[in-house]
Every structure is written in C-alpha cells, then in structure tokens.
Length: 146
Image (cartoon, rainbow, N blue to C red; front, side, top):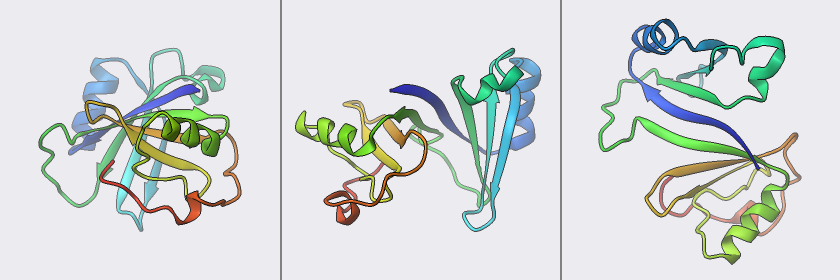
C-alpha cells in the first residue's frame, strides 16, 4: 500500500492557492476540470517534490472545488485519505474478513471506500489499470456514506 493524497474541499480557488502555494510554499503539479461532474481538482506537492516527476509518487494534497456552492459543516470539507493497492479485490476481501465494511465496493475494479473507526473516509485505488469487473464486487451495493 502506498499513500497517495489527502483531499480537502475548498470554496475559493484563489484564496486556497494563495494560502497553500504563496504562504505555505506548496506547488501546483496538475489540475483536472470535470464539466459533467461540475468540479475542479488541483493537486499540490510539497516544495521540491514537483521536480523530475517526483510529484506522481509523492503524497499530494488534492484541493476539490465543487462548482455548485455548498456549505461544509461537521468536517465535510475534509474529504479522504487515499492509498494505492496492488490488488483492489484482495485488499477489500482481506478487510471484509477482518470486519471492515466496504462502503463503496470496487464495482469498477479500480476504486473502493472504507471508513476508519472515527468515520474518516479512506479511498483505495487499484495500482495501474483497473482490474476486470468481477463478482461479488460488480453487483455489490453501497453501504452508508463515504
């Protein structure tokens, strides 16, 4: 398992970039806009990690800007921790065998969500390409929130 990023929802891109980049010294390494989903993702690396492609391997901060305004209460602005795993299905099965609820099963062979005992969402992402869709995962329903 490799730590990937921490996601934080933001309400103002300019103010957030001023804080994280100008004040903290982080560096924007990539940006993704999803018109259908109506959000922008901005990935930041610690100073020095952006060089020579290191940012693809270094833990990042993911700033998520949802285009439709939303009030974030109860810590909802903190999104999730993300980890890359070698085998999403084997990882989820091992977690289930240990009593962990898979809140968002890896139906797509790529992404799953679980929660810590304190309710922190944890995203699990398949290393490399998505695995072929497989049962029981492909037809497994979501449980709760993530």
